[in-house]
Image 1 (cartoon, helix red, strand yellow):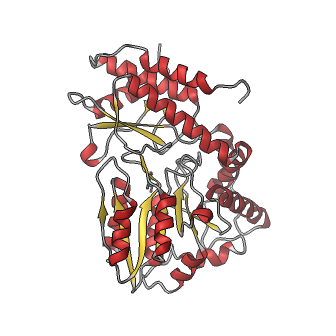
Image 2 (cartoon, rainbow, N blue to C red):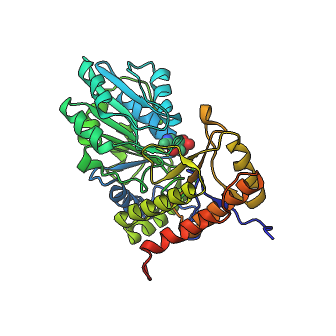
Image 3 (cartoon, rainbow, N blue to C red):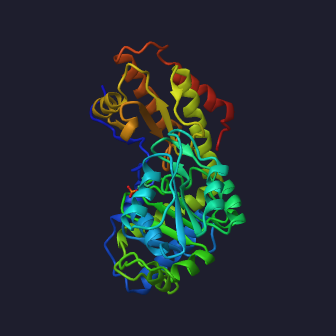
Length: 386
Ligand SMILES: *Cc1c(COP(=O)(O)O)cnc(C)c1O
């Protein structure tokens, strides 16, 4: 009855890619040093500013999201700067790894898994630093499903003239972020999450003061030299061969985003996330994140059960991908993403698959209670035509 599989990605990257975006990407490759391509690049650059909520250029790198994280650290590191990596999971750890690899001066802030950082704890680090502080933080810590208060962090950082660098690779479009209004200095994202594209592009935008800061950076770099990328971006160009077909696909995805409107997209993610959380709780399961993100819902697995087994079961039996836990959370949590090209029916399928799995593993609950809750919650806010 369930074969042939219809695959569905309810993972926090990669996420499903709309058909029109796939078709755009499948078009014949055009040459990048042409007016035709520059016009496309110009248009996507404008649209990316809208998504980032910034007036500054959003640079497009041909790498996965981590490339933009590396670019941020490599382009900022210099004498007189101390990084404050905020580590509350796997992706905060990536900031820490980058600090170590580039042998920069840093002062680690570690936070408990499943929690967001306390602003006062970051403030303590800034207060005691004799150097210029650069906070390396995350909008949605995908490994734990926690959203951080970036607006609050920026507000506090301003008092100390500190810079704030935000990894919004999974958070962008799901959790609200307003780069310029909030005073984010560097914002990083990637293609295979909320932007509804395959993996392969990274994005980075710098505030005016961050652009000034990178001019005095001392770390060796070449491909990821952002001063080069900024110079060419001003002429709707790129320093190296861009990922042409991906950028054509990006244009299509951004058209969808503009049509729906960023405020509506934030609202859609917020409702789907809330509905998912309610459904999960009605199964008798506990949410793992204290401040849950609207990109992904992380759920504690009942003690006697292994979440990895459930994730594998759902993927192999039903063609639906959800995510397990990483590192010390392996086997202990599972994560359902409601990120990007997702609507209520994708979540229904996901919750049904989770119910089937729990049922077959002998977990005691009322079969259908998750689905029922999901439908009830959906109907509360459903209006015809929206
Ligand atoms: C997915 C993700 C990354 C890593 O991006 P890659 O595209 O795999 O390099 C980094 N940070 C966060 C928060 C993520 O969700």
